[in-house]
View 1: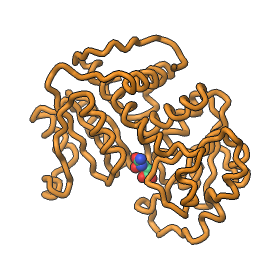
View 2: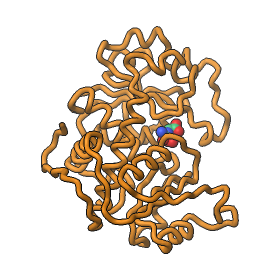
View 3: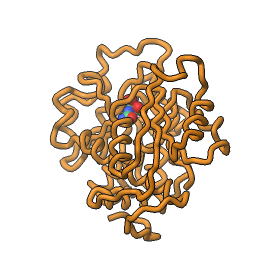
View 4: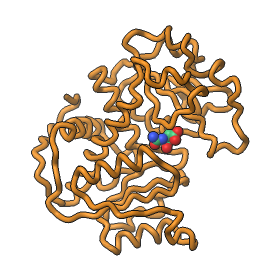
Length: 307
Ligand code: NCD
């Protein structure tokens, strides 16, 4: 693994190793010995992902270079490619990129000597979010095989849906979607359940935000909660042990009743916490694969199954 671009590039073994490594970092403080620099290049808004990368990087002892598109030469028309090459030239050892283009990494492929992490590519992929979601599910159930997982909401415009659908199917989960008319994505070929049925069969309900910024026409949200969202009545019909995920930001009162955001089965804030340790694991894996030393004693077992 030289870059972290897509869940499609990960073997089952690599997925489990990252889950284990993230748990290791939760318990074990580890710092890189060398002076290393990282740039978080976010061309789209972000709170959680950008800040959890920053915390992960600082926990590992990396120096985080400040970058904001509004005050950068992006305003003078500088391209993504030239921006990234600039960071490489001035000494960044790693770049984390979020960009509205679905395939922004294509223009960088083979052109950089430092690793790249995909922190969100348009509607296509969000592989670090997927990995932290996998960690949250595995902590709960200790397996993926046979779990009923419903991804619900704006499937058509969600990179979180695409990364998770692929990875979870690959790991043996029964994946379903539940989406309002017009928000489905036929290219995924995943059975679509109405929300009333979805809540009763799922072990994991992964709710998604309506991605207004990616819609060509403003989406209608007036009756969304009642027709397609998680109301209190629907939540009361979920299995006792079923959990609720959401990558956030949450549209309270649209895909979920506001009171359910912190209900007993919600793992929404747990996901954010897991994001720090998962991103530490991914960063350290990439840097170690490029020969950068650190003192961790994490033992790479070649086994499927985590902790
Ligand atoms: C998601 C994203 O940016 O794709 N958020 C996140 O990274 N936690 C989901 C969203 O914006 O709805």
